[in-house]
Image 1: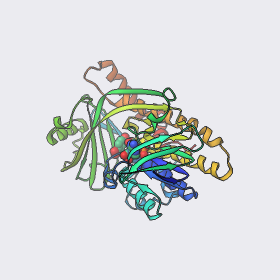
Image 2: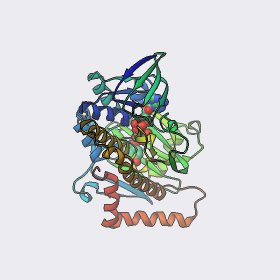
Image 3: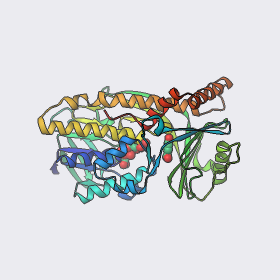
Image 4: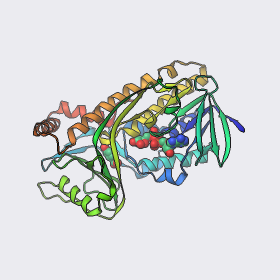
Length: 394
Ligand code: APR
Ligand code: PHB
């Protein structure tokens, strides 16, 4: 079997793995990125699209923010909608000028892959049978089938950036990790439509029929979501039904109209929360969705992934430069503080905005009281805004 040596083996070419590769490269540390899908699949995979200020700044610092800065949409506020009225939360005014950047995750992935390949950095797509070995030793190994050839990679560290169905998490000895989970009894049906956004900011809408979200990807592409029963399949949702539900849930009493257009893509995703502790096992470090999942309501998933690898990249750099292990030892605790803040915020927003047919009327009254409070009290709105735009990096 052919053996290759590197410093860091990175499993997964999503935002976490690719950004980590970029941080390490800029600090003179070698890595190999192993991805099981092909390039086209990874570059097209439709995901989130809201970057906190700190995430957009990180991409710029890493030299991959140029196209983002040309094509992004900057938003200074978001809207909460209920009972046919819309209320704007002034994110920038409440957070000393911070904003959010709307730019699709798959566009970020494209930019990162292009940068990686231009640097000649090893990035292998369509690898098979990734297996991790000797995590507790100082020379962990990864075995992989690449173009049907078995290979072995020896390294100093493994970064498990392989998402929620990856191989890294199950590679630890039984009982090493503790998992904290909450599932919600609903899904989100998301569409991408070829139509200009009907409003230039995001709208989070509470409605008796269930939650709806108006978002966007560009001046000509709208991204919309409706809450649906957890077990629904996409076949139950022909285009007319999706638009009818969006029209009902986003309707305003002032006659504002949601614009409709051809649906380019549609899909259903389960809503859940999941945290694995600690975020490391010997010389393997988990980052991004491999370690934690948040409900999309707070738009935190990609931002947490980028925060993890910023901390991990810095910790590995300190270790290589000076032999200092302290940042690596603190990696899990440092990241988990932010992860749990985001879990709480995402759970709170999810609980405030979603309805179930079985919910009691008391619950609806509490949700509405909470939303009215957010729109009237600058203390409550400031708390929302600082969570939404994201805290300074640790
Ligand atoms: N071997 C190699 N690659 C793998 C394996 C495996 N066994 N299992 C999964 N992968 C790859 C996936 O194909 C994917 O490209 O790991 C990558 C993980 O990427 P993401 O799922 O995008 O996760 P992450 O980089 O942590 O980014 C988090 O993604 O799900 C969204 O909301 C989430 O925006 C957040 C972001
Ligand atoms: C999106 O544009 O896909 C999006 C925006 C905000 C969210 C979730 C998803 O909270």
